[in-house]
Length: 360
Image (cartoon, helix red, strand yellow):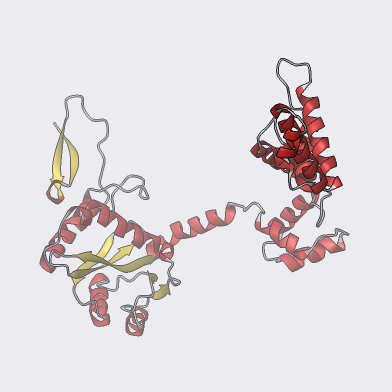
């Protein structure tokens, strides 16, 4: 073809123009009419955007919407995109998706059951407070009789949110305070030794003044050994009315029968519920923080000596929050100390703790 054109006397520049024209014509004929219209539309829209009279061409919301829709309906939209990057159009589409669903969430109609009114909630709380033995079916029945359209599950849900009266807790605290002289508790805790062995420390504690009635150490905490420790802890018929202990295998039927033979009513805690024996668990924590965590136990004899010293310190010197900052043995505080009095410190437990007194 080039030879023919040259023979016709065309110049090289005209020849290149004719080749470009032929290439465009072939491309146009190969494209469908739909693609051609979309391409012209995209190019015209970009021209309109670039011809706007601003210090810098700005992309309006209508332009963004146009390209988002064109991206959806024409797969070859990237080929004619000039004035922005394709990633920008994708970002516009995601932003429009977010705006669309935010608008739907604000204007959608509420589905499901009606909200429970404040009056109905207050009435439910009132029924719960006035009838502590009623359950959800009973309260739901009363509300249905009053003409309220509410489900039983909703009543149950609001019953759980009802404000609790502090009176039952006060009554229980009063009961414990009035009967604490008749309550004792027992428990074990373990202590590791220098040679990687394990020693078992057994104790019995009274609830009235947090006194330790018995404390001993062994390597083999059998039920027979526990029974002997109970006999030593309650001499001369000084038995409490109730004895609280957990469900350890050491406290088997033989131990329970022995406790009953003393005239004591055994009270076993629930499974994995140490909080039900809170006084004993609190003493274990105090013993660990005050002594066990600061020493390395050599053997059984060493631990017995340490525990005897700690029990003496616990009774005579250590103040307790539950006893209004007093001690189980009733340590007397100084009243109206003289200006010239001097404070002296006396070490306890090898210097881990101290007791302070006034001297003239």
